[in-house]
Image 1 (tube, rainbow, N blue to C red):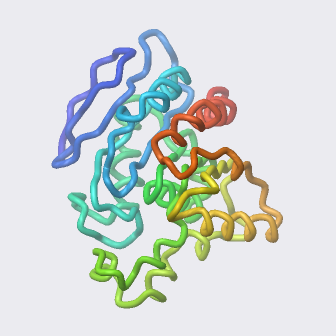
Image 2: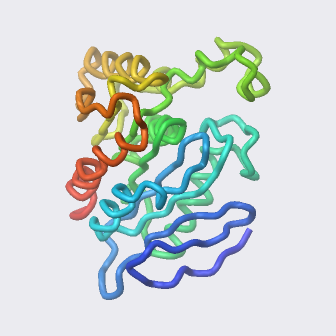
Length: 247
């Protein structure tokens, strides 16, 4: 697995890491890197650049961004049908963080995690398991209760023996009451047809555990994921800027 250093430009660009294409927003020339962001995609692997408002908002943070295009990925510690050579969470923690270190000389805890859908729950998975490494995390409609889809003929049935086995790997069960990321942002459209109830359950556990976090469960695009991402892009970028720019 090898790669070259990306060109330094203000525009989104691409690099190939083994069999994985990554979208990059390199550090602007003349700027000293304060922090970086890794963005994990949803199950469809849709490029962050295909959400124009999000791509623009992230660019305006002036933070270097790295986002892999990985399809069929549930972003757990279990190897799945994605093209990744190692389990997804290991790929993020070792390979992607290693690239951020190599390209921009930035290391945890100055690397924030962010994701959409399955990628959103993956970002939370890593932040909850390694809170000191990843104290800043933001998730858009995270697939908290992905275990509920076990037994419906999806590839989850191949990854886990049962719905209970899948549930044991969910975000909520990896939240430690004494060791949690200091800066969390959860956003989900209340009309989201798949993941809103799970987000509410996670929020309830955070509240009952006395763990501080930020959230928005009111903004709605009537269940239209693309419009919803557009609507929350600027608040997400502000959250990242506030907690990373001065780190």
